[in-house]
Length: 167
Length: 167
DNA sequence: TCCAAATCCTTGGATGTCCTACTATATTCC
DNA sequence: GGAATATAGTAGGACATCCAAGGATTTGGA
Image 1 (tube, rainbow over the protein chains, first blue to last red):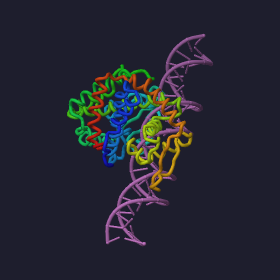
Image 2 (image 1 turned 90 degrees about the horizontal axis):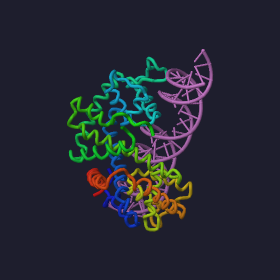
Image 3 (image 1 turned 30 degrees about the vertical axis):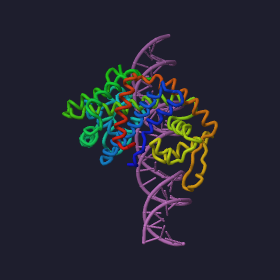
């Protein structure tokens, strides 16, 4: 990766906010900006681990979700809701996963509008191997202490609830 | 926004991890997934506020950075480093901002390789109005308590340092 | 029963991000 | 000096996400 900057650019932004008389919101601005940047770092790390498996994080998430579903199948709209992404994002992911034989689309037995996404044996196998890799190479060395992990889960959990993600 | 889910999907994922014998990494997995989702929520909120100004968060960040620079100008590579995005992302943003007259490209006085990005008066004015809107509509009601903001800044700050963002 | 409203999925378009490769300009070192 | 190396920015391509719009199917109320 690139050479580290001599100073934290987010801390500098916070100072700029304070200098301009926006001290009231300087800290939340810094926290939010830090979340954005942290997500970038984590996504790059995850996609790097998944690259050898030929899937991206978005596609892996779908495979993992299906692997936990009874029968290894879920309606598209359920997947969209649980992954909390736009339906078109699921369409996109399914197109690509189906293209390489990791999932197949099948029609819902009673509702003609609904399309079921079904894990193939190859998809299930890949999900297992990819999860093992992520567990070892990312989650087991997240860079957060146990206490920090608990704080993040608590703080971001209430944030997501307040944002309307879940009841 | 859509109807809230009856259960937290990330907490459910964590339970699935534990049920499959990955208890050691279930919590970090949940924390990381929560960061990803929180970023999505925040980005949507920010872009919603910026929409009336005709800019996205990526372009706003560049305008804000320039507004704090002496002379309202920065080399492309400096902007890339400070925003911590790929150079091509800056090229993209500058193309669009220049297209609507908010910035202009100028050549570096001594280094012919370098291109300076310069804020136009319109760009500076828009940056000011957009910042005011974000301060009031997003940062002042972030959904985090002061204590949570401090925790996030501390935890994510050390994470970013460890990730090599800054010294 | 039958048509309007709701739901499901897909297509097409806009953005942002990254990577690889390429051109132009500077620097370094023989 | 001049060639090899390094740095700056851009073009082209791959992905993911969202929104708006449209076709298909189901549900529900008149």
